[in-house]
Image (tube, rainbow, N blue to C red):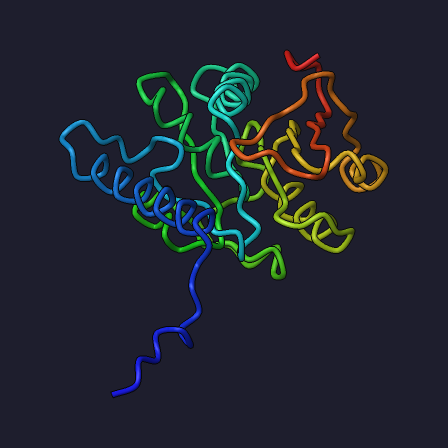
Length: 213
């Protein structure tokens, strides 16, 4: 019998080590999810899907944006998170506070959050449930999934439909002109960070006097 092992492609030791590290991280995450202390609202409890252009904020950034939204919404305020699930998750960690929040998201994995989840496709910006009344949110936080003029324009339609006035937009620095044109927002001094570093510079934009400057 011929020994054909030489014909089988072999992984380099570096690639093999990287794969083992990846699988170990996955096992550790799954172990955390099944442990008693698992928090379904913690950032990373639902993993990023790069094919959907998902990149979660760092814990510090998500906390800062969530705190800003609570202050901007005011007592008993309503907050909408449009394609910004990590801010939604951080807001839910503060659930004892006097505000309500919902998440508009394309990724149906977030339907685990029940009635607060609203399926959202930016290609159909006003295809929203009837009970989502116009101008019914004190602040809308939005992070359009793609750095394109079309995506921003369509997401802007949704934002303007939902908000009573206040807008907190997170998108690339290269979108500054389009953000001002479509939503009348100005760039903030605060620079948001992601859990994984992105190649594109990211910024926050608002249309009100915020705590992000």
